[in-house]
Length: 476
Image 1 (cartoon, rainbow, N blue to C red):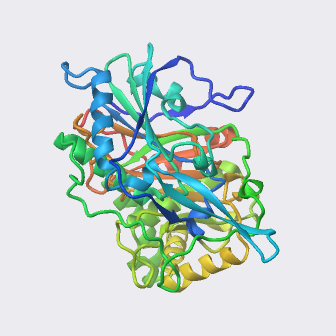
Image 2 (cartoon, rainbow, N blue to C red):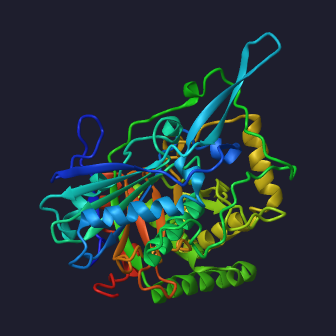
Image 3 (cartoon, rainbow, N blue to C red):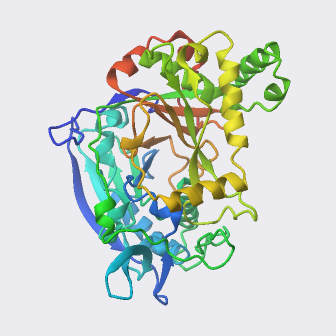
């Protein structure tokens, strides 16, 4: 089974997806962690910057559970072990709270936000997709994700995490997740899901049962001391929040085998050697080669004017780049966007442009050092802005998510997921989300998001389709 197909979301008058079949909500339940002392965790620069962005929306498709396990029983079991997992991940069950900062005359001069770890709870939704089989999922995919359209600031009132368990007509199950991006980045999100999945496989309902190292909630501070909540220069944080309407978009999920990626890398290497860039050739990675391909093909699909400048942006995890480094278990936001130097469209698409683009991506990633990460954080603090997809350069290409995330390790006792999917959150024309390939071995999947006319052009791109591999249908 596979979801590696094109899916175009139809929009209603309110901008929301209009599924071709109804997904019914059967029940909702709040799941709370075991009782513990109440505390607050401050949100700092990289967290607060996410307030206008959407919740993370990622989902996993599973084969039908064992005949003896109904979906209602599955939801009950998942809720029980989620409560146990929240013993370690208790901030996930909290809510945001704003504090106002006053001057000597009692006037508000700023606001800060923290996570109130009061055990308010997360939510699990049980849903049924009537008449929808695995093959129909692309047409109704957005209805499989909770909190559609919510922005992270809404975590003041909404749960910071919601899971939706949707039963399909053929017995397959989709677990759709919505996780507040101001609370944590993708690395922390997948660490949490894998910890929950491990507890679910064990069947234990006791606290602290995951074999994983405990998450680290103490926020990073540039001076190495205790982190304080970042104070925004406003009377009310709500005045800084933007909610741009989502544009019409098409998604295309494609697969790249390990062999295909090796060929892309070797092609880039030969081009760089021919151009005299031995250092760039030696430093090449499969990520750079695939990013180069997508940057070039998306630029061509947009039909940019030859002299128009374009860049490639990529999400970058700063955990290992900071000095001292942060552990993998750091539960917060340490991600930022790095950018290549600008290139004119005609030069990017010229013969040899694949190698140049791959090396440019490598230079951008290598330049993200401790000093660069600190400089970005300091510059944002001088002029804080709330990131959202409305800020995105329409000539740029953006690479998000990561094939390093252990998505297919999320076995909740249902077996290995059949596919990974996403909702419409934080998508824009020109964004690609990278996932590991299900068969492993260094393969990758790419979910390309484009405006409808740009997607139509990409469908005719010979360079793109020459690199795409057949989906590994039916592999376990």
